[in-house]
Length: 205
Image (cartoon, rainbow, N blue to C red; front, top):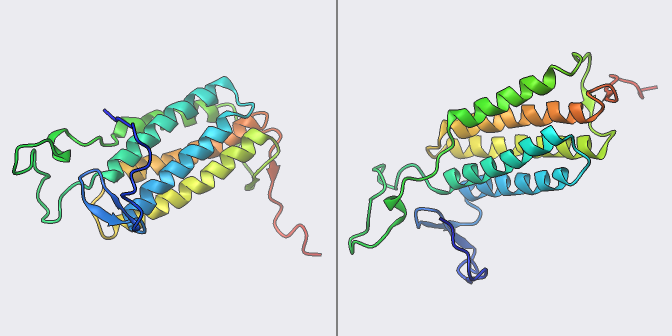
C-alpha cells in the first residue's frame, strides 16, 4: 500500500533518490531514467484520454495507465541486491524492509490483454499500403505522440538491461503497447479511413 502524506521531503536535493529497495542512486541513473519515462508516457496518455476517444479505446487506455504504474514499480525494485542474492525479508533489527513483501512484477497476461485489444481494433482497419503521417484528429495525434514516447521508454529499458537484470516481461509489454497505440490511433481516424499516408519523395521537385 502506498501512503503519501508530505509531498516534499528534501531527500533529493543533492541529486539522489531512493529505489524501492532503499538503495540511494543518482537521479541520472539508467534505472531512474527508465521508470521516469514510464511516468512521462502515463501523463501523455492522460492527455489523450481527454480527447474525443471511442469509449473502447478510452477504457483500455485507463487500464494501460494502471499497468504503467505496475511497470514503474517493477523497475523501481531491482530483482537482486548488489551481491546478486535475493533481497532480505527483514533488516538486522527485525524491522520492516522493502523485501518483506514480494515486489510487484509485470506478468505475461498484461501483454496478452494488449494483444487481444490490438486484434479487436485491427479487425476494423484496412491493410496499409504506406506509413501513416501522425495527425488528422486530436485523438490520433495524441496516441501517435504516446507511441513515439513508448518506443523511447522501451529503448531506455533495453539500455538498463545491458547492465542490470530486469523482468523481461517489461520489454514485451512496452513493445505490445507501442503496437496498440499505433492501431488505436488509426482506429480514431475514422477506423483508418481518414489516415494520411506517406508519399515517398512527394516534395522533392
